[in-house]
Structures are given as C-alpha cells and as structure tokens.
Image (cartoon, rainbow, N blue to C red; front, side, top):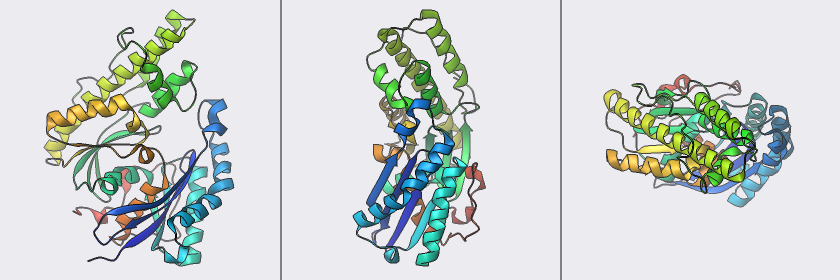
Length: 355
C-alpha cells in the first residue's frame, strides 16, 4: 500500500491568490486539509475585468499570509509536506511568476520536490479528487480564459477535441455583463438576471450548431446581443433581464450541441468515456449544469461537476494535480518556467495510461 502524500498547492494565474494542503490517504482518496482563497474582485471591479499589473501586485502583497493560513489550518509545517506545487501557467505572466517563484523558494528551503502544474490540467484532474473518476473521461473545461472539450486519457495525456475559435465562454459572460451595466465578475450577474427574464424575447443565434467538429464561437453571439440592446435602448430592468435570459439560453443550447458532438468524437477516437465532466468557473452556472446532466443521462453517463468552491481558481486543485504527478515521479527542477501560454498537448506524457 503506497504511503500517504501531502502537498501544498499555490494558485496565482489570474485574480485569486490561493493556497491549499491536500493529502492522499492510504486508501487512495484525496482529502482537502485546507483551502485558502483571497479574491481580487474588489480591486478590478471598477475596470470591468482583470488588470494584469494590479493582479500581480496584489498576489505579492498577500501570498505569504495565505500560505501561513493554509498550513496552520491543515495543522502542518513545511517539513511535514511531501511536495510543493504551483500553477506555472497558462495565465497572466506576472501573477504566475509570483506563485511559481514562491514555490521554488519554499521547495529549496524545505528541500521538497517542486511540481510545476499546468492550470488547465489541474481543472481536468479535479474529478479524480472529488469523485474518484477513472480514465478516460470527456471534459468540458469552461472558464474566463479557456473553453475546450478534452478527452482526458491520463495524467499528462489529453486529446483536445474542440475549442473556441474566438472568445472563451467566461469571457463572453463578462463582456455581456459589462455591456449591460452589470457588475464584475459577469457570469453570476448574468445568471442572476436571467432567472427573472424571458429567454424567448430576443432571437439570438446558436453559433456552430450542427457543425461536425466540436468547436465553439461566442463572438457573433455577443455582437448579436449588443445589436439587440442598441435596438431597444434605453434599457429597462426588464430589458436587461430578458437579454441575459436570451443570451444564457443560446449558450446552453450551444454547449449541449457541441458537447454531444464531442461525445461522438470521443467514442470514435478513444472509446467509451467513464463520465462526462464539467470544470472551470463557468461550470458553476446552474442552467448549464442541468442541461449537461440531461445530456449525460441521454448518453448513459453520469455528469461529474466539482463543488462550486473547486470550480473557480483555487489551490486545492493545484495540490491534487501535484499529488497525481508526484506519485508518478513527475517532478520539476528550479528551471521550470512560468508560461503565459501552455497548451495541454505540450504536457509531459510520461504519466499516461494510468488507471
């Protein structure tokens, strides 16, 4: 029976500063011992989006305290850890440098293995922490910076089936919110307004619907909404709610159609998936989750969505990805670079085909 592993994970790729300690027990199950997250929403709200320089400075100011809290709440010291993991990209390069440099310093001082984690793979592996999902599975990864449909075949082994050709889905939600005068971050605000709106009032397009390759496009949908908003301006509260409801309905239809196509592509190229998984910040959207659950039921698959606290950026998923790589001997040295771009396809595949 393998010995337990305990890893500290650091996340600084965008506008959350996070640290977490996660343990792998002798039974092979993961346990989150602490998960500290400090959001920067207040710092960026006035700009309607994340300002990279402000984000990097905010990470520097709070990361030490976040790490101390995570260790204290886990009841551990650096000496008791088995590894130090940090998101090394993709993300805003200033923020990524803060977390990765801090992890390198801690690993040197404590003489622990360093694990430079791909932020996208951390999201991809989260259902193994929360639900023990086995490989291979189909992942819808939807966040502010990424929208992809991926066959997750193993640690470091991912086949991208489809992606967005323009805006990420979370980015589209944020831009729509800004256009309609809603607060940042836009996703929860649009969903909240949509609850009281009429999804059939505005006939918005369903981009890429029916295309044979499971790609996404949201730029045209966003433009169509802007044109409708200009047509009925000045906007009333009812107008805003109806626009949000119509936008969200179009998104749900598009996501379901694209995921259905990806399931077909998965079966043709990989085989039968063990589950349908949704991860990333947009996976917190209730209507999208419910629609995917119905699609999964139609396909004979269970839908696995991490708890809301693990859908957004956090240190627990980084720590877990570190555990996944550490137990395969996939560690990094002090030359591990910070990366603004880091496609899943460029990961080390030495850990592929694990059960």
